[in-house]
Length: 333
Picture (cartoon, rainbow, N blue to C red):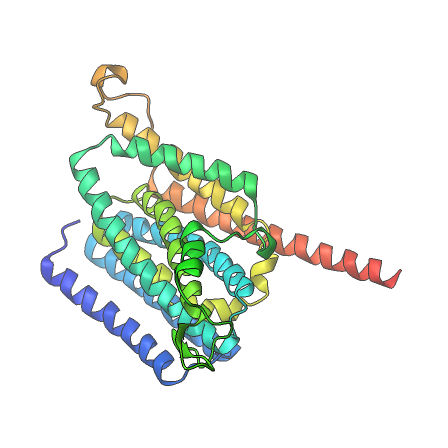
């Protein structure tokens, strides 16, 4: 896929303008968006991603467009899992609903910056060292196994990391959020940080961890930096509104982590097979390509990703409904 500097510039300007509008809305009127408002924004961002994929199809063909859609769906599903952790962080720090939009937007911007850095680093490594795919593949398989073992995390399981604990000790932090700014003045006239700073640190470190998972996953689908970047941006756009749209539904997606573990495991195996097919590592098969390693086509990857997400979502909703009915029956008795 040959992407000129002009296309990169136009893409960055347009996507930056969309994010700026989102930022302007938050800056002018911090509020908890309604279901209608959230639905409109989420639908707009999803439609934007679908139209972008059609544009890729027209200019570069169906295979490249399939890589974008598969990458976008993978990153979107990982972003929803990221959103679940955001919910836990908001709950643990008791962030007022009217300030949660601002926190989410900051979290999304941090995620974009971190993923942008990892994309640049990943593209540079892949172009120089083909064996990086072995590392990416092994890391994704390891992550998939851990995710399947751990399952969903709830607020009681969340533990503050070392960065947050250090910030609590090193900084003067107030007990309330005041007017929703990072600093406030206490009754003694001393300026202090509000807990909002700790929340943003928690969100930022969480973004870092998720970026470590998501970037190898997308490179397992496509090694085109342009597709990797745009798939990540479109996956993060509308995430703030999706948080308010899903609401309690996030807690009902009990099999989401299991579904993601299947997807990450599949992509990890795909990466290892592709690394074997293009092998030049001296101590593997004498540095020669492994002829039996199959190439997994993009249509199969897309089928596995969509199928897994659908099955995980439907199974989650069925289990949640059954659990709710059991609780009602128990309450009646």
